[in-house]
Length: 176
Image 1: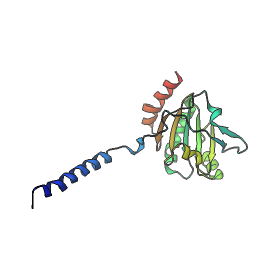
Image 2: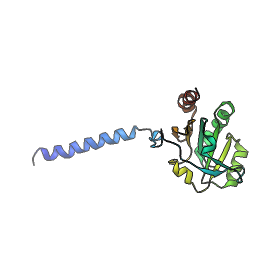
Image 3: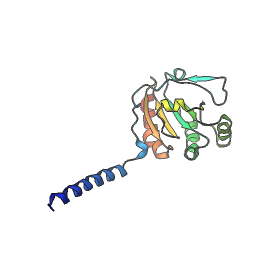
């Protein structure tokens, strides 16, 4: 057999091994969102606590706000929840919840037990607004600026480090 017959498969294997190594070092929480820098999708959803009241994106224009996608059935949401409760007490920026594919009764009970950090929670039973926002799974957190443009997306539970290093500095910048 000729030498190249051994070298070609070995070279292909090394290239594939390189791609695997690069992929294993990527952070799955930093999935780039095509919505960053684009207007947040419009919505009109009933409030979780009062289904007779509807909240829309237009109601939130002119101020910086945070949208946190959560569900009572989500274990990771429970992990980040105490941090959000604390953050909401000291943040000048309103935190809105998007209750995703959850039963109203379960979600209200969850908030009653663990505390409610949200200025309002929207009830997205079918998940359509979540889909419009490109939600991969819960929890996810978005920062929307005064013009209604998505400026930041975090996939997974918010941590003290993400809050301190990414969210709080961006909020200061957007409110300056």
